[in-house]
Length: 312
Ligand SMILES: Cc1cc2nc3c(=O)[nH]c(=O)nc-3n(C[C@H](O)[C@H](O)[C@H](O)COP(=O)(O)O)c2cc1C
Image (cartoon, rainbow, N blue to C red; front, side):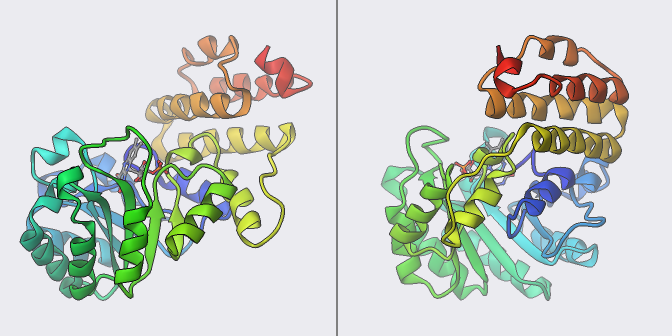
């Protein structure tokens, strides 16, 4: 997820049991390649394998070159984004806009697969809109192009993030192709993960928004999918360690100025997920500029005897 699945967050999700955590999407446009932000997006130092990097673009040769560039720098899987609905991305006919041009999809996928020795995967939506739900054809093109797995978000581009994801199309795709199919969209509990796996026959599920402020969700899911008890939340001491550890990792990764700001975003998600609300202390915390001070104030939040009191 752009702006979210940086290395610190990917590592945290992996520690809690996610089988794989894909990088933020990176543009194949060579003009952006040397930006500091782009470099951080493909920084895998110390990261667990397999390291998957998602690339975005519209031009087959450029995509192929960029895939090779990433494989040479440690990517062990190249994931191609055909699902991004963002206006900025679609007006450049990238992301989900590509779904409208099946011939171009075939050329891009083929060029990238030929360019690298590592597996290439693809992430799609179910189509451009309800009248053009062509995910099944795209999945077949992907398989014929040598793509090794396909993730399907059960919404069209026109849906944005509205309404509910539908899984019937994912089931049809799973029945039609031999490559692994990963189901995605609105999966936010271990029970839902089980239900979606059962109803679609998919080989795996991918979790997006539900992991924000809740990376421990993967632990509950893993346990439940292995036949164990369902969701087991974490206690206050573990929450303190996870949140402060994440903040520290963000400060180290981005440096003080950017790290503190990115940490604020995650803190908001943590508070929402742990407390269901923002404690009044967050106002002061959000004004803090220094990493140490941010850490001290956040650590203090967890001195309350219980989450309940903290939320009061
Ligand atoms: C803020 C945000 C950024 C996202 N960035 C990406 C991205 O870079 N690449 C991608 O394939 N999907 C991206 N997505 C889509 C998610 O991967 C996922 O397909 C979608 O949110 C539905 O799954 P969920 O209901 O589990 O969140 C993004 C979603 C959000 C909310």
